[in-house]
Length: 316
Image (cartoon, rainbow, N blue to C red):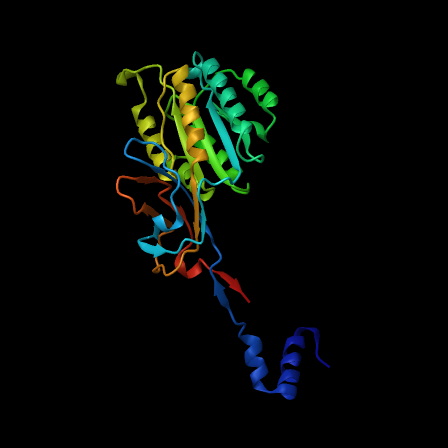
């Protein structure tokens, strides 16, 4: 009889006696098949020389390169109707007190327009940030509830902008469809625990398109946080969005309207990365072009993946 500690060795001797060494070799070598299953999503806005969105392009008009390697487009949807999950982040730090009422009124009008047309699953969430970040309302189509929450906001404290972007993007990761973050702020970060890189990476991981709306009552550079404004500009460009800098009133409403128009005219593309050379760099650069001269494609600059050797799922 085999003792408890020798059970494995008894099993090996029995297998050798019945089937020979080949069976043991197979048991010891579990075959591994590596299958790349990641689909990379790309939202693209195409603009003409006047900055106006261009619709009507076909799949054959687009070309995608991943780290310089051409890729085959597996999914193509012109003017995609994939549901929108839009997180609106409102800066309620002490410096925004005078503008806050105008901002919340414009946000309320944007919420109404968002659910008025488009996909019936489009939804919005509301966040505020000062020295802390709060999700005031989870994703919903209940506009009266969102409007009630907006009326309750007041300004106080510092500005945890990067924390707000990091957390809002993380909350979007598991939602179906397209992910959008709109942040209304006067620019700059003073109290975040996260930094610029962490905020950008969180946006990339969640496939977020970021649209900062900079409401700046002070037009003199001496009184503005131009460093923070520049950081928001590069953050937005990295995700395929861009910055708006309106004044209060009609221009602020127009900024929200322009964002919604872009979202309604986006192209949705998807591809499975292949033939990529091995690299230890986790960030993959994406380049999307179209064949038509004079047209410009606005999309995110890339995504974070694993190194090529470990980017596949192991199937045993």
